[in-house]
Length: 533
Image (cartoon, rainbow, N blue to C red; front, side):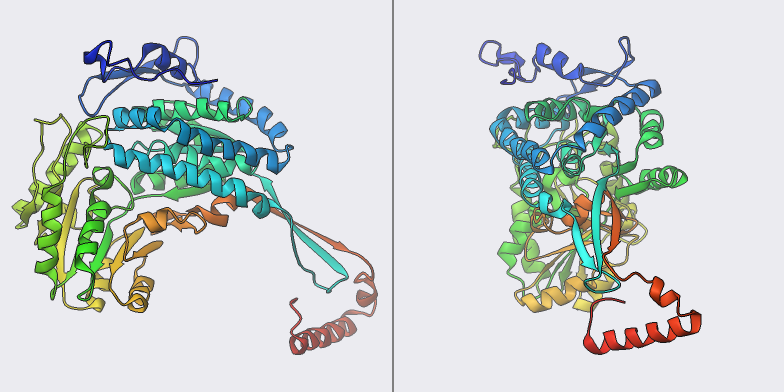
Protein backbone atom coordinates (compact mmCIF):
# COMPACT_ATOMS: atom_id res chain seq x y z
CA UNK A 1 0.00 0.00 0.00
CA UNK A 2 1.45 3.37 -1.00
CA UNK A 3 2.05 6.00 1.65
CA UNK A 4 -0.09 9.14 1.58
CA UNK A 5 1.66 12.45 0.83
CA UNK A 6 3.50 13.77 3.86
CA UNK A 7 3.55 17.46 2.90
CA UNK A 8 0.61 19.69 2.17
CA UNK A 9 0.41 20.48 -1.52
CA UNK A 10 2.39 23.70 -2.11
CA UNK A 11 0.79 24.16 -5.53
CA UNK A 12 -2.70 24.45 -4.08
CA UNK A 13 -1.45 26.50 -1.13
CA UNK A 14 2.03 28.00 -1.63
CA UNK A 15 2.16 29.08 2.02
CA UNK A 16 1.79 25.43 3.08
CA UNK A 17 5.23 24.35 1.86
CA UNK A 18 6.33 23.68 5.44
CA UNK A 19 2.99 22.26 6.63
CA UNK A 20 2.88 18.53 7.23
CA UNK A 21 -0.27 16.86 5.99
CA UNK A 22 -2.47 16.58 9.13
CA UNK A 23 -3.90 13.20 8.12
CA UNK A 24 -0.41 11.79 7.66
CA UNK A 25 0.78 13.18 10.97
CA UNK A 26 -2.17 11.61 12.76
CA UNK A 27 -1.52 8.26 11.08
CA UNK A 28 2.09 8.37 12.25
CA UNK A 29 1.47 9.56 15.81
CA UNK A 30 -1.07 6.78 16.35
CA UNK A 31 1.90 4.41 16.23
CA UNK A 32 3.33 5.73 19.49
CA UNK A 33 2.92 3.17 22.26
CA UNK A 34 0.82 5.42 24.49
CA UNK A 35 -2.47 5.33 26.37
CA UNK A 36 -5.73 6.65 24.95
CA UNK A 37 -5.48 10.02 26.71
CA UNK A 38 -1.74 10.61 26.97
CA UNK A 39 0.28 13.68 27.71
CA UNK A 40 1.75 15.23 24.59
CA UNK A 41 4.84 17.10 23.40
CA UNK A 42 4.70 19.68 20.62
CA UNK A 43 7.69 19.64 18.30
CA UNK A 44 8.93 22.51 16.17
CA UNK A 45 10.54 22.81 12.74
CA UNK A 46 14.18 23.93 13.22
CA UNK A 47 14.23 25.80 9.92
CA UNK A 48 11.41 28.14 10.97
CA UNK A 49 10.68 27.63 14.68
CA UNK A 50 7.03 26.96 13.79
CA UNK A 51 5.03 24.22 15.55
CA UNK A 52 5.36 20.94 13.70
CA UNK A 53 3.46 18.11 15.36
CA UNK A 54 1.79 17.10 18.62
CA UNK A 55 3.31 13.78 19.70
CA UNK A 56 1.76 11.50 22.39
CA UNK A 57 4.06 10.83 25.34
CA UNK A 58 4.39 7.30 26.67
CA UNK A 59 4.13 6.51 30.37
CA UNK A 60 6.12 3.91 32.28
CA UNK A 61 3.07 1.61 32.06
CA UNK A 62 3.02 2.11 28.29
CA UNK A 63 6.66 1.04 28.08
CA UNK A 64 5.99 -2.07 30.16
CA UNK A 65 3.01 -2.94 27.96
CA UNK A 66 5.07 -2.44 24.79
CA UNK A 67 7.68 -4.89 26.06
CA UNK A 68 5.00 -7.42 26.96
CA UNK A 69 3.63 -7.30 23.41
CA UNK A 70 7.15 -7.43 22.00
CA UNK A 71 8.01 -10.59 23.93
CA UNK A 72 4.98 -12.42 22.56
CA UNK A 73 5.81 -11.35 18.99
CA UNK A 74 9.52 -12.11 19.41
CA UNK A 75 8.92 -15.71 20.47
CA UNK A 76 7.19 -16.34 17.13
CA UNK A 77 9.63 -14.25 15.07
CA UNK A 78 12.65 -16.14 16.43
CA UNK A 79 11.22 -19.36 15.04
CA UNK A 80 11.00 -17.95 11.51
CA UNK A 81 13.70 -19.04 9.09
CA UNK A 82 16.47 -16.45 9.07
CA UNK A 83 16.09 -16.17 5.30
CA UNK A 84 12.51 -14.99 5.80
CA UNK A 85 13.77 -12.35 8.21
CA UNK A 86 16.46 -11.33 5.71
CA UNK A 87 13.79 -10.86 3.02
CA UNK A 88 12.17 -8.17 5.18
CA UNK A 89 15.48 -6.29 5.32
CA UNK A 90 15.87 -6.45 1.56
CA UNK A 91 12.41 -4.94 1.16
CA UNK A 92 13.47 -2.15 3.54
CA UNK A 93 16.35 -1.43 1.15
CA UNK A 94 13.90 -1.05 -1.74
CA UNK A 95 11.34 1.03 0.15
CA UNK A 96 13.70 3.68 1.52
CA UNK A 97 15.12 4.25 -1.97
CA UNK A 98 11.66 4.28 -3.51
CA UNK A 99 10.20 6.67 -0.89
CA UNK A 100 13.28 8.82 -0.52
CA UNK A 101 11.68 12.06 -1.72
CA UNK A 102 9.10 11.96 1.07
CA UNK A 103 11.68 10.78 3.55
CA UNK A 104 14.15 13.53 2.66
CA UNK A 105 11.41 16.13 3.15
CA UNK A 106 10.64 14.74 6.60
CA UNK A 107 14.28 14.58 7.71
CA UNK A 108 14.84 18.16 6.58
CA UNK A 109 11.69 19.49 8.22
CA UNK A 110 12.14 17.64 11.50
CA UNK A 111 15.88 18.11 12.10
CA UNK A 112 16.93 20.98 9.84
CA UNK A 113 19.46 19.26 7.58
CA UNK A 114 20.54 20.22 4.12
CA UNK A 115 19.01 17.76 1.67
CA UNK A 116 22.35 16.27 0.66
CA UNK A 117 23.13 15.46 4.29
CA UNK A 118 19.65 14.01 4.73
CA UNK A 119 20.33 11.69 1.80
CA UNK A 120 23.33 10.27 3.65
CA UNK A 121 20.82 8.76 6.11
CA UNK A 122 18.73 7.23 3.34
CA UNK A 123 21.85 5.71 1.79
CA UNK A 124 23.01 4.42 5.19
CA UNK A 125 19.77 2.52 5.82
CA UNK A 126 19.80 1.04 2.32
CA UNK A 127 23.45 -0.07 2.64
CA UNK A 128 22.91 -1.63 6.06
CA UNK A 129 19.69 -3.36 5.01
CA UNK A 130 21.30 -4.88 1.92
CA UNK A 131 24.50 -5.90 3.73
CA UNK A 132 22.78 -7.72 6.57
CA UNK A 133 20.13 -9.24 4.30
CA UNK A 134 22.88 -10.79 2.17
CA UNK A 135 25.58 -11.58 4.71
CA UNK A 136 23.66 -12.00 7.95
CA UNK A 137 22.24 -15.41 7.14
CA UNK A 138 25.74 -16.87 6.96
CA UNK A 139 26.85 -15.02 10.10
CA UNK A 140 23.96 -16.46 12.10
CA UNK A 141 24.45 -20.02 10.86
CA UNK A 142 25.87 -22.55 13.35
CA UNK A 143 29.66 -22.57 13.31
CA UNK A 144 31.79 -25.70 13.75
CA UNK A 145 34.92 -25.52 15.92
CA UNK A 146 37.69 -28.02 16.68
CA UNK A 147 36.85 -30.18 19.69
CA UNK A 148 39.15 -31.25 22.49
CA UNK A 149 39.61 -34.59 20.70
CA UNK A 150 39.83 -34.09 16.93
CA UNK A 151 37.09 -35.91 14.98
CA UNK A 152 35.74 -37.58 18.13
CA UNK A 153 34.42 -34.35 19.71
CA UNK A 154 31.95 -32.35 17.63
CA UNK A 155 31.56 -28.67 18.68
CA UNK A 156 29.07 -26.16 17.30
CA UNK A 157 28.48 -22.52 18.21
CA UNK A 158 24.89 -21.25 17.95
CA UNK A 159 23.62 -17.66 17.98
CA UNK A 160 20.34 -17.12 19.81
CA UNK A 161 18.51 -13.78 19.93
CA UNK A 162 18.81 -11.89 23.21
CA UNK A 163 15.05 -11.20 23.28
CA UNK A 164 13.82 -7.60 23.19
CA UNK A 165 16.36 -4.91 22.38
CA UNK A 166 15.94 -1.36 23.63
CA UNK A 167 17.26 1.41 21.36
CA UNK A 168 17.64 5.01 22.52
CA UNK A 169 18.37 7.09 19.44
CA UNK A 170 19.33 10.78 19.20
CA UNK A 171 18.08 13.66 17.08
CA UNK A 172 21.15 14.25 14.90
CA UNK A 173 20.78 11.17 12.65
CA UNK A 174 17.17 10.27 13.40
CA UNK A 175 16.65 7.84 10.51
CA UNK A 176 20.01 6.07 10.63
CA UNK A 177 20.05 5.61 14.39
CA UNK A 178 16.38 4.66 14.78
CA UNK A 179 16.43 1.88 12.19
CA UNK A 180 19.96 0.93 11.05
CA UNK A 181 20.77 -0.53 14.48
CA UNK A 182 17.36 -2.17 14.60
CA UNK A 183 17.88 -4.05 11.33
CA UNK A 184 20.58 -6.49 12.55
CA UNK A 185 18.69 -6.86 15.82
CA UNK A 186 15.56 -7.91 13.94
CA UNK A 187 17.51 -10.19 11.60
CA UNK A 188 18.95 -11.98 14.65
CA UNK A 189 15.39 -12.79 15.78
CA UNK A 190 14.84 -10.05 18.33
CA UNK A 191 12.05 -7.57 18.83
CA UNK A 192 12.94 -3.88 19.20
CA UNK A 193 11.49 -1.04 21.27
CA UNK A 194 12.84 2.36 20.22
CA UNK A 195 12.85 5.62 22.17
CA UNK A 196 13.76 8.35 19.68
CA UNK A 197 14.50 11.87 20.75
CA UNK A 198 11.15 13.61 21.12
CA UNK A 199 12.23 16.30 18.64
CA UNK A 200 12.55 13.75 15.82
CA UNK A 201 9.88 11.20 16.67
CA UNK A 202 8.06 11.42 13.35
CA UNK A 203 11.01 9.91 11.51
CA UNK A 204 11.09 6.89 13.84
CA UNK A 205 7.33 6.53 13.41
CA UNK A 206 7.80 6.67 9.64
CA UNK A 207 10.27 3.79 10.06
CA UNK A 208 7.61 1.77 11.89
CA UNK A 209 5.21 2.33 9.01
CA UNK A 210 7.90 1.41 6.51
CA UNK A 211 8.76 -1.81 8.35
CA UNK A 212 5.08 -2.76 8.29
CA UNK A 213 5.07 -2.38 4.52
CA UNK A 214 8.28 -4.43 4.32
CA UNK A 215 6.43 -7.32 5.96
CA UNK A 216 7.65 -7.12 9.57
CA UNK A 217 5.05 -8.71 11.87
CA UNK A 218 3.20 -6.53 14.35
CA UNK A 219 4.77 -5.50 17.68
CA UNK A 220 8.34 -6.33 16.65
CA UNK A 221 9.26 -2.65 16.19
CA UNK A 222 7.55 -0.30 18.60
CA UNK A 223 8.07 3.38 19.41
CA UNK A 224 7.86 4.96 22.86
CA UNK A 225 8.22 8.72 23.29
CA UNK A 226 9.12 10.77 26.33
CA UNK A 227 11.93 12.09 28.51
CA UNK A 228 14.96 9.90 29.06
CA UNK A 229 14.69 10.16 32.84
CA UNK A 230 11.26 8.47 32.68
CA UNK A 231 10.79 6.58 29.42
CA UNK A 232 14.49 5.91 28.84
CA UNK A 233 14.89 4.50 32.34
CA UNK A 234 11.82 2.29 31.89
CA UNK A 235 13.26 1.05 28.60
CA UNK A 236 16.54 0.04 30.26
CA UNK A 237 14.68 -1.63 33.12
CA UNK A 238 12.74 -3.86 30.73
CA UNK A 239 15.09 -4.63 27.83
CA UNK A 240 17.47 -7.56 27.35
CA UNK A 241 20.13 -5.34 25.74
CA UNK A 242 20.33 -1.57 25.44
CA UNK A 243 21.72 0.18 22.37
CA UNK A 244 22.38 3.87 23.06
CA UNK A 245 23.79 6.66 20.91
CA UNK A 246 24.29 10.05 22.52
CA UNK A 247 26.44 12.07 24.87
CA UNK A 248 29.16 10.53 27.02
CA UNK A 249 27.56 11.95 30.17
CA UNK A 250 24.23 10.24 29.48
CA UNK A 251 26.02 7.11 28.25
CA UNK A 252 27.66 6.67 31.66
CA UNK A 253 24.23 6.77 33.29
CA UNK A 254 22.85 4.25 30.78
CA UNK A 255 25.80 1.91 31.38
CA UNK A 256 25.34 2.15 35.14
CA UNK A 257 21.62 1.35 34.89
CA UNK A 258 22.26 -1.56 32.51
CA UNK A 259 25.09 -2.87 34.66
CA UNK A 260 22.86 -2.98 37.73
CA UNK A 261 20.68 -5.48 35.83
CA UNK A 262 23.65 -7.29 34.22
CA UNK A 263 22.26 -6.31 30.83
CA UNK A 264 24.65 -5.71 27.94
CA UNK A 265 25.00 -2.14 26.71
CA UNK A 266 26.22 -1.01 23.29
CA UNK A 267 27.17 2.69 23.51
CA UNK A 268 28.33 5.12 20.85
CA UNK A 269 29.14 8.37 22.62
CA UNK A 270 30.90 11.68 22.00
CA UNK A 271 34.00 12.58 20.04
CA UNK A 272 36.57 15.35 19.63
CA UNK A 273 37.94 14.04 16.37
CA UNK A 274 41.15 15.20 14.71
CA UNK A 275 42.17 15.55 11.08
CA UNK A 276 45.89 15.62 10.23
CA UNK A 277 47.08 17.13 6.95
CA UNK A 278 50.70 16.10 6.35
CA UNK A 279 53.15 18.20 4.31
CA UNK A 280 52.86 15.87 1.28
CA UNK A 281 49.05 15.77 1.15
CA UNK A 282 47.03 16.44 -2.00
CA UNK A 283 45.85 19.84 -0.73
CA UNK A 284 42.93 20.58 -3.09
CA UNK A 285 41.48 17.13 -2.51
CA UNK A 286 42.04 17.38 1.24
CA UNK A 287 40.43 20.82 1.40
CA UNK A 288 37.32 19.60 -0.43
CA UNK A 289 36.95 16.55 1.84
CA UNK A 290 37.65 18.60 4.97
CA UNK A 291 34.53 20.66 4.29
CA UNK A 292 32.48 17.46 4.38
CA UNK A 293 34.35 16.10 7.39
CA UNK A 294 33.80 19.26 9.43
CA UNK A 295 30.41 20.56 8.36
CA UNK A 296 28.15 17.64 7.36
CA UNK A 297 24.86 17.93 9.23
CA UNK A 298 26.05 21.37 10.39
CA UNK A 299 28.73 19.61 12.43
CA UNK A 300 26.13 17.75 14.49
CA UNK A 301 27.76 14.42 13.79
CA UNK A 302 29.60 12.22 16.25
CA UNK A 303 32.38 11.43 13.75
CA UNK A 304 32.75 15.05 12.59
CA UNK A 305 36.23 16.63 12.65
CA UNK A 306 36.41 19.37 15.29
CA UNK A 307 40.22 19.71 15.30
CA UNK A 308 42.39 20.27 12.25
CA UNK A 309 46.11 19.55 12.64
CA UNK A 310 48.10 21.14 9.82
CA UNK A 311 51.76 20.49 9.13
CA UNK A 312 53.40 23.90 9.35
CA UNK A 313 55.03 23.48 5.91
CA UNK A 314 51.64 23.54 4.13
CA UNK A 315 49.35 25.21 6.69
CA UNK A 316 48.97 28.54 4.88
CA UNK A 317 48.51 26.97 1.44
CA UNK A 318 45.92 24.54 2.78
CA UNK A 319 44.01 27.24 4.64
CA UNK A 320 43.78 29.35 1.48
CA UNK A 321 42.08 26.45 -0.29
CA UNK A 322 39.96 25.37 2.67
CA UNK A 323 38.73 28.82 3.73
CA UNK A 324 37.75 29.67 0.16
CA UNK A 325 35.52 26.60 0.09
CA UNK A 326 34.08 27.27 3.55
CA UNK A 327 33.15 30.86 2.68
CA UNK A 328 31.34 29.68 -0.45
CA UNK A 329 29.10 27.22 1.41
CA UNK A 330 25.40 28.03 0.97
CA UNK A 331 23.19 28.07 4.05
CA UNK A 332 19.49 27.55 3.40
CA UNK A 333 16.22 25.96 4.36
CA UNK A 334 14.84 24.82 1.03
CA UNK A 335 13.50 21.32 0.44
CA UNK A 336 15.90 20.86 -2.45
CA UNK A 337 19.60 20.35 -3.13
CA UNK A 338 20.39 24.06 -3.47
CA UNK A 339 21.81 24.45 0.06
CA UNK A 340 25.09 23.04 1.39
CA UNK A 341 24.45 23.52 5.11
CA UNK A 342 21.28 23.36 7.16
CA UNK A 343 20.69 24.62 10.68
CA UNK A 344 21.15 23.47 14.25
CA UNK A 345 18.47 21.40 15.94
CA UNK A 346 17.51 23.64 18.87
CA UNK A 347 18.06 26.89 20.73
CA UNK A 348 20.14 24.98 23.29
CA UNK A 349 22.47 23.73 20.57
CA UNK A 350 22.75 27.21 19.07
CA UNK A 351 23.60 28.60 22.51
CA UNK A 352 26.34 25.98 23.01
CA UNK A 353 27.94 26.67 19.65
CA UNK A 354 27.75 30.44 20.15
CA UNK A 355 29.26 30.20 23.63
CA UNK A 356 32.12 27.95 22.48
CA UNK A 357 33.06 30.47 19.78
CA UNK A 358 32.67 33.49 22.08
CA UNK A 359 34.74 31.81 24.80
CA UNK A 360 37.52 30.86 22.35
CA UNK A 361 37.73 34.37 20.92
CA UNK A 362 37.79 35.87 24.41
CA UNK A 363 40.68 33.53 25.24
CA UNK A 364 42.66 34.72 22.23
CA UNK A 365 41.49 32.66 19.23
CA UNK A 366 41.12 34.22 15.79
CA UNK A 367 38.04 33.71 13.62
CA UNK A 368 39.21 32.77 10.10
CA UNK A 369 35.71 32.20 8.73
CA UNK A 370 32.16 32.41 10.01
CA UNK A 371 31.77 33.03 13.71
CA UNK A 372 28.20 34.24 13.98
CA UNK A 373 24.56 33.19 13.93
CA UNK A 374 22.41 33.93 10.88
CA UNK A 375 18.89 34.77 12.08
CA UNK A 376 18.25 36.37 8.68
CA UNK A 377 18.09 32.83 7.25
CA UNK A 378 16.32 31.14 10.15
CA UNK A 379 16.29 31.08 13.96
CA UNK A 380 18.88 28.31 14.34
CA UNK A 381 21.39 28.93 11.56
CA UNK A 382 25.07 29.41 12.39
CA UNK A 383 27.84 30.05 9.90
CA UNK A 384 30.48 27.35 9.26
CA UNK A 385 33.26 28.57 11.51
CA UNK A 386 37.04 28.10 11.47
CA UNK A 387 39.10 29.20 14.49
CA UNK A 388 42.87 29.41 14.89
CA UNK A 389 44.92 29.86 18.02
CA UNK A 390 42.38 28.23 20.36
CA UNK A 391 44.16 27.93 23.72
CA UNK A 392 43.95 24.94 26.03
CA UNK A 393 41.86 27.01 28.45
CA UNK A 394 39.02 27.46 25.92
CA UNK A 395 35.99 25.18 26.26
CA UNK A 396 36.12 24.09 22.62
CA UNK A 397 39.73 22.93 22.88
CA UNK A 398 38.73 19.60 24.43
CA UNK A 399 34.96 19.69 24.90
CA UNK A 400 32.74 18.44 22.09
CA UNK A 401 31.06 21.41 20.39
CA UNK A 402 28.74 19.39 18.15
CA UNK A 403 28.24 22.19 15.69
CA UNK A 404 29.79 23.81 12.58
CA UNK A 405 33.05 24.79 14.31
CA UNK A 406 36.58 23.51 13.70
CA UNK A 407 39.79 24.70 15.35
CA UNK A 408 43.11 24.85 13.46
CA UNK A 409 46.42 23.87 15.07
CA UNK A 410 49.86 23.87 13.42
CA UNK A 411 52.29 21.00 14.03
CA UNK A 412 55.89 20.36 13.06
CA UNK A 413 55.88 16.56 12.67
CA UNK A 414 53.82 13.39 12.49
CA UNK A 415 54.72 12.64 16.10
CA UNK A 416 53.41 16.01 17.28
CA UNK A 417 50.22 15.49 15.28
CA UNK A 418 49.65 12.05 16.79
CA UNK A 419 50.26 13.34 20.31
CA UNK A 420 47.78 16.19 19.83
CA UNK A 421 45.19 13.92 18.19
CA UNK A 422 45.37 11.59 21.19
CA UNK A 423 45.27 14.43 23.74
CA UNK A 424 41.58 13.95 24.47
CA UNK A 425 39.30 11.84 26.64
CA UNK A 426 37.52 10.73 23.48
CA UNK A 427 38.52 8.12 20.89
CA UNK A 428 35.94 7.84 18.15
CA UNK A 429 37.23 8.86 14.74
CA UNK A 430 40.16 10.45 12.91
CA UNK A 431 41.44 11.38 9.46
CA UNK A 432 44.95 11.40 7.98
CA UNK A 433 46.01 12.98 4.67
CA UNK A 434 49.28 12.06 2.93
CA UNK A 435 50.27 10.94 -0.57
CA UNK A 436 52.31 8.14 1.01
CA UNK A 437 49.65 5.51 1.74
CA UNK A 438 51.96 3.37 3.86
CA UNK A 439 52.86 6.40 5.96
CA UNK A 440 49.15 7.18 6.28
CA UNK A 441 48.41 3.74 7.67
CA UNK A 442 51.34 3.93 10.10
CA UNK A 443 50.06 7.26 11.44
CA UNK A 444 46.46 6.01 11.55
CA UNK A 445 47.44 3.02 13.71
CA UNK A 446 48.82 5.44 16.28
CA UNK A 447 45.52 7.33 16.65
CA UNK A 448 43.75 6.11 19.79
CA UNK A 449 40.31 5.88 18.22
CA UNK A 450 37.98 3.29 16.80
CA UNK A 451 38.20 4.31 13.14
CA UNK A 452 40.57 6.35 10.98
CA UNK A 453 40.09 7.36 7.34
CA UNK A 454 43.16 7.93 5.18
CA UNK A 455 42.77 10.36 2.28
CA UNK A 456 38.99 10.66 2.52
CA UNK A 457 36.30 11.87 4.90
CA UNK A 458 34.32 9.80 7.42
CA UNK A 459 32.23 8.43 4.54
CA UNK A 460 34.70 5.57 3.92
CA UNK A 461 34.76 4.35 7.51
CA UNK A 462 31.04 4.83 8.17
CA UNK A 463 30.00 3.48 4.79
CA UNK A 464 32.21 0.37 4.87
CA UNK A 465 29.56 -1.51 6.79
CA UNK A 466 31.29 -4.89 6.68
CA UNK A 467 33.84 -3.48 9.15
CA UNK A 468 33.01 -2.72 12.81
CA UNK A 469 32.63 0.90 13.90
CA UNK A 470 32.92 2.00 17.51
CA UNK A 471 34.77 4.14 20.00
CA UNK A 472 37.52 3.92 22.59
CA UNK A 473 37.92 5.68 25.92
CA UNK A 474 34.98 8.06 26.59
CA UNK A 475 33.57 7.45 23.11
CA UNK A 476 31.76 4.27 24.03
CA UNK A 477 31.55 0.51 24.23
CA UNK A 478 30.83 -2.06 21.55
CA UNK A 479 30.50 -1.74 17.78
CA UNK A 480 27.93 -1.33 15.07
CA UNK A 481 28.38 -2.68 11.53
CA UNK A 482 30.04 -5.89 10.40
CA UNK A 483 29.81 -9.23 12.12
CA UNK A 484 30.27 -7.65 15.54
CA UNK A 485 27.34 -5.33 14.82
CA UNK A 486 25.11 -8.38 14.34
CA UNK A 487 26.52 -10.68 17.02
CA UNK A 488 26.03 -8.03 19.73
CA UNK A 489 22.31 -8.78 19.41
CA UNK A 490 22.82 -12.49 20.03
CA UNK A 491 23.78 -14.87 22.82
CA UNK A 492 26.35 -17.48 21.87
CA UNK A 493 25.81 -21.07 22.92
CA UNK A 494 28.36 -23.88 22.57
CA UNK A 495 27.13 -27.44 22.15
CA UNK A 496 29.80 -30.15 22.32
CA UNK A 497 28.97 -33.76 21.42
CA UNK A 498 31.34 -36.66 22.10
CA UNK A 499 30.80 -39.18 19.32
CA UNK A 500 32.74 -42.17 20.73
CA UNK A 501 35.46 -42.93 23.30
CA UNK A 502 34.53 -40.69 26.18
CA UNK A 503 37.03 -39.45 28.74
CA UNK A 504 35.91 -42.01 31.28
CA UNK A 505 38.57 -44.45 30.10
CA UNK A 506 41.27 -41.87 30.93
CA UNK A 507 39.83 -40.80 34.27
CA UNK A 508 39.64 -44.51 35.23
CA UNK A 509 43.45 -44.63 35.09
CA UNK A 510 43.67 -42.53 38.23
CA UNK A 511 44.82 -38.95 38.67
CA UNK A 512 48.54 -39.45 38.21
CA UNK A 513 48.21 -41.69 35.18
CA UNK A 514 45.55 -39.40 33.65
CA UNK A 515 47.83 -36.36 34.05
CA UNK A 516 50.75 -38.17 32.47
CA UNK A 517 48.75 -39.37 29.46
CA UNK A 518 47.16 -35.95 28.93
CA UNK A 519 50.56 -34.24 29.12
CA UNK A 520 51.88 -36.59 26.42
CA UNK A 521 48.85 -35.83 24.27
CA UNK A 522 49.35 -32.06 24.61
CA UNK A 523 53.01 -32.31 23.63
CA UNK A 524 52.15 -34.50 20.66
CA UNK A 525 49.49 -32.00 19.55
CA UNK A 526 52.03 -29.18 19.65
CA UNK A 527 54.47 -31.13 17.49
CA UNK A 528 51.70 -32.10 15.08
CA UNK A 529 50.27 -28.55 15.11
CA UNK A 530 46.83 -29.89 15.91
CA UNK A 531 44.36 -26.99 16.44
CA UNK A 532 43.09 -28.04 19.85
CA UNK A 533 44.24 -27.43 23.43
